[in-house]
View 1 (tube, rainbow, N blue to C red):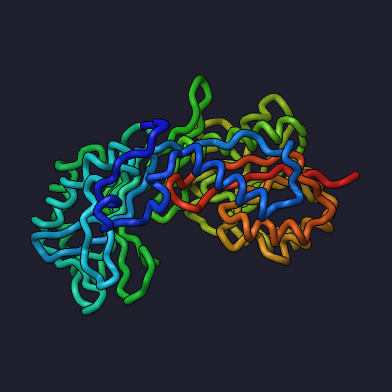
View 2: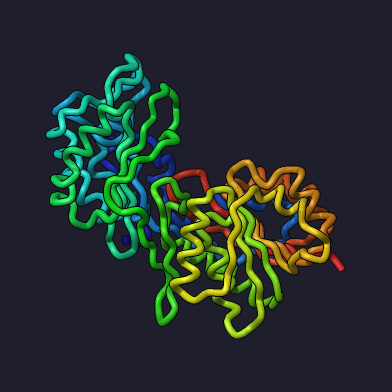
Length: 390
């Protein structure tokens, strides 16, 4: 994974065929400065001294997941993006993907061409294969997913799965997702596993790394190195407070819960993660069991769980990591009136974070940090440590 000072030269950007990395020609230091200024503008209540040094996401080779739209025609596909007219633009050599992903895209294109599956045409609403998703673990193993329109596409890939396994022996998970509707989404609800069930993401070094297990429809941050820095920062903040109990709401596959429970080894810290996805909860439970980490997990809606809790059951510390819309008025109001002393709020949208913090005036931001999960774009991750005012 590269981390160079100078911006990379992207031939797709320079040719004007892909502008997804809007700021790729801007030096990374300047990108970080602009993002920090944006956070300061949206979150004016945070004093300058509270901001820790931002975490850079790198310059190239940092993205652990490729979401490749399939274009072209059967036997001559493109893997990349679609232009405004629905035509495919091949991005085989996209610089932002981790090297292991870049290396297998040509092989995947060859497999798709040999399969004879027709790319789905958005303007015509015809065709079969819509996307190919590839995720890489720190160990170099892959999760490969094909998004198709119908059973016909599933049958073709299922019949050729042995060929794909021989072509990509590092593929620990292969699955097919069915998306029959004509919708501007990346996947449907139905997932058919063909090989394996979960991709092992081993995070951390030394004697006690944490392995998170990603199932095909699990959420995980797109930048593995920055995700690890985010979890470690949360663990540092929690250790600095030393709570006896903690809830991780919107816990996903358990990253924050597992790292904060592990960091409290030798104490009686009770950690509970709550997540709507039952698959994610099963993955988190597997991680905790294998690592011997004393964390518990529950499948359910985070807001409903919090509102139903008895006052005597409330924790001393809460971590929230919501989607872009934020935690919303109901949960923000509950936290405000809960009496809970400390909260970590990890946000991928500083605008929704700002709205939620306005509803929580009893808390002050003690420390904050920018995590550049999405270099070359305007997107960012920001985490804040909140402490209830005395």
